[in-house]
Image (cartoon, rainbow, N blue to C red):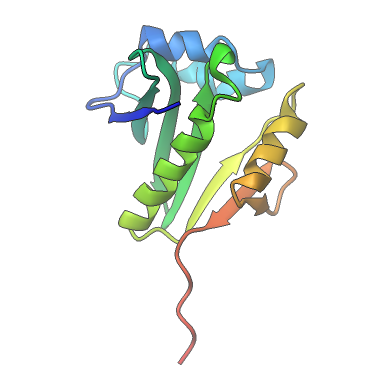
Length: 145
């Protein structure tokens, strides 16, 4: 299956984001709840469309102190289609083009946690300092002189 990656110019909460967020676990809702209905979302957002043009995933990259904080949301009916991995590959490329050192993400508690952690592992992420944090180095550190 092929996908299309589209940057949301002036990202705002949309019906597509609401539909995708409806399939997220309750543990992810506190952060999402703050964004519902927002006229402007934090960070840079993209949507992933399938071959029919339907939005099947959304991704966010926010830069904090030289690291990229990411979220990838996939619609329930598009999970295991490759849409999430496609989005993560695109985010990795975006982080590299911005010169970011790391991608970081958090995995909330919930029924899908083990599956999401296994997926992040396949994407190259490793556990971070906290139970919920995972990170991926996208730019090699320079050796000390």
